[in-house]
Length: 366
Image (cartoon, rainbow, N blue to C red; front, side, top):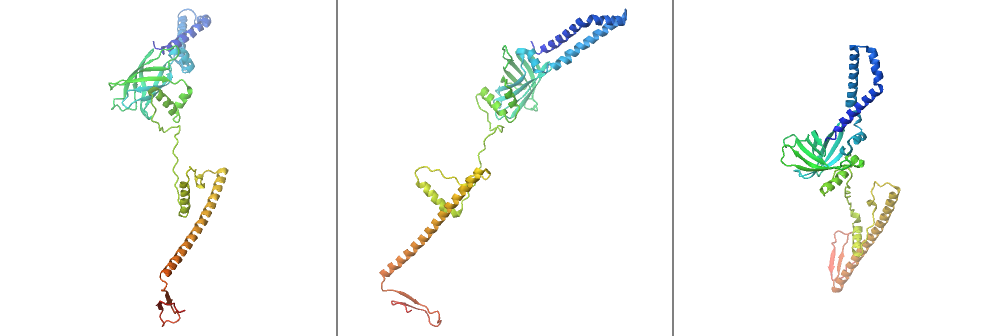
């Protein structure tokens, strides 16, 4: 039995019931009025034929136009179909495809006395590989056999058209699962499928959004295949990007300071957490607290640099004095080793004719 034949039965029965009820309520007065107006003879029969024609037209209007317009409401369709209600959004797992597992999003939408079956299939990278639109179906509960078309194929790969058959689970309430197969017309291998209906409106809304559909697809991919998606997706919902490394600027004037800090940190046995510098605070942090912290750290750094520079100058002077003392000690040592030798130089800058006299062995004349 096709559950969707109930719509025609309901519309026909309801239309007939309305007409019969109208005839019972207003038939005798109307018949009397028509007989009086047409008179006896052939005119009466013509009037009766016209009345019957009006009733038939009214019945067709109820059956084909008025009631089908009411069948678009979800509450009406649920009431008519009962446990055979299959419309909604489904997720279909496809196993045995050439490219591995796939997950298809299937929409079964109402269309008058029947339904529209369409969807698309995604691979593990959430890329669309094919789509589905039913061209013909035969629904005999709990089986549905159908022929579908894939508009993403040009036909050269043999995946332009296919057939499928699914079996819905039989419960006292509306079905929420199905299983079966699909097969492309030019393929010899069948693809096993399994479907689950989305019963939460929140999941359906997320699936309609590109930013949040990844959450729903990841959940059901894991349930169907016991694996996770290859999602660096790209979605929406939002991977944390690593922060870009900041360039380190080393000033030559601070080389001694850096060496001293490195030496001090190397000499300590315990782990010392380095103090944060003003440059570690981002320039875009413009809050009053950040400004105060930067100003305080910069003042401390300037003070430390002044102290290090003064120490460096003192050390330079001390090194110079040490070198002078070392030279004097060397000269004294030479004099002690050669006490009889002295070097004198006499230069008379005022008199150019008298050359400089350098003597050895006696003090120079002054």
